[in-house]
Length: 397
Image: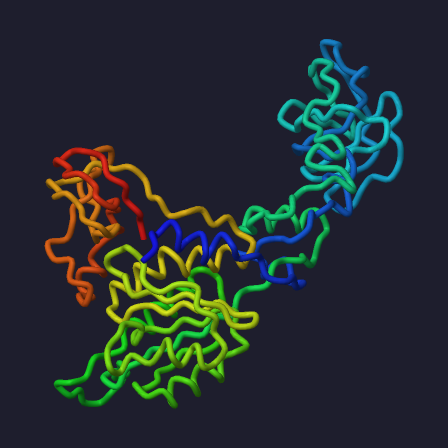
């Protein structure tokens, strides 16, 4: 049995980002760019007015009242197109190109206009209310480095730089296979006493999609070697195959046998953690295989610790070990045993006084407890007892 840290090293740290693909810049949210993004233009591409007013030559100002003849208009998208001469002014609007020769904009509130002539007492302030060419970025300048996580703000920057498409790491394709004769789908018309509704499958489907990966298959297979082998074989093209249940040592736990029959090279089985001890990890050609335990909380905890970071790594995103943050605990905690314990807990208290409160029951089959909690208190192997108010590691979800 290996530690959580050792399992993370083998599952996540040894993984490499997937190959690249070109996507529309507007659809790059959540993706990671695979190469630097350079600007195809300067921003702005010319000196631009930052205010509505009049473009002038600054040396024409400074008198108690300066008078200048208005000779034209420069509007956004419609430049004046001629040089400004001494004694002249050009009506200009925000975002318009500053005419050649002008080096100051006098805002319209400080100007009186009579018969095509402006009067102003504005002082000489060369550069006032002008955004210089290239103040944001210059043509050919790298505006985004390889490895940048694309969000709304970085997508806006890439578009401003004139990039309509981006090279990003491919989204992983994830197949999710729930196993067990007892499983019933949530839409079953009438449930039997021996039914267990398949909640872990939809739960992991949502988690995978929230991570930005593509769920290419979600299905169920019964507890027979033939059924499991067929389902595993049909999903050989997924980047990650996730199985739920059937990885323990019961008489009908055939998942590991079926995986190995379909070419999986087993890396490890069993991790010193609770919940989630019976965790299988292996590799098939071009595919990582995670065999998760069947209880909803166990599957969810394992997915948080290993599946989500693995998706991040394959997409080129940072995938640090999920060590949590330090928060005070609301109750005493007993000494921990030989497995790292992930305790479901709620955040309580007013802002600035937050504490984490462990759920009364840690039964890994209880969906209500998982839904009501905000994260996991991490108790290390052989950790000493902790008094209320002491800091503990807390992993939000």
